[in-house]
Amino acid sequence: GAGVSQSPRYKVAKRGQDVALRCDPISGHVSLFWYQQALGQGPEFLTYFQNEAQLDKSGLPSDRFFAERPEGSVSTLKIQRTQQEDSAVYLCASSTSERTGQGGEKLFFGSGTQLSVL
Amino acid sequence: GQNIDQPTEMTATEGAIVQINCTYQTSGFNGLFWYQQHAGEAPTFLSYNVLDGLEEKGRFSSFLSRSKGYSYLLLKELQMKDSASYLCAVSPIGGYNKLIFGAGTRLAVHP
Image 1 (cartoon, one colour):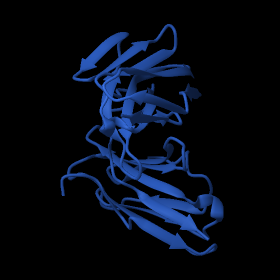
Image 2: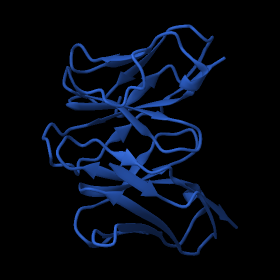
Image 3: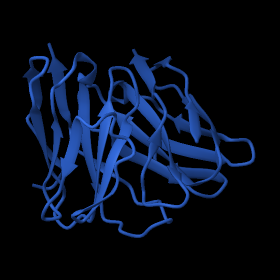
């Protein structure tokens, strides 16, 4: 596809359940980001990959959150033992840039996965 | 760190002009972005300012003043489809293109 694709679009989980959220970035995009967006708030950074390397995971809220991108394309965000406070939209974004300290390259976002933990 | 402030909500009339302000406190950044996000959809890129001044792109313009820690997004000839959230974000110095977002301004355009 032409854009960033995320699945599932909606996920309902019972508290304590594990979930896995998938992101297919734009083909050839080196950089991949995960963001968490609470209702009525802006996206908050979770983690960043450059190809398969996870260069920044400073935004992951706890060790229950884990992300991977083993072949440098598709990425999965896994949340273990989900809690109600994990309910949010999880956005994935990709960009072409692999340069550091430059900025300016726009991010292309997917429509997100809306996670509801009951 | 970065602290980004935007008004929570604004309303405007179709055909009018609206200015959405963004103020920030940050130790330094590469540039400032504006994104548009319709409810339930992906944020989409609107503009990027790295130098002080006005960047014009059709009905949308964005302004940056680094010395004042201030940016605004100007929307002209408002249309109903412009009803959306508008997100201000900075790209911090010293890394990749990680964006730090404000909470967004929800704009409602009415006839």
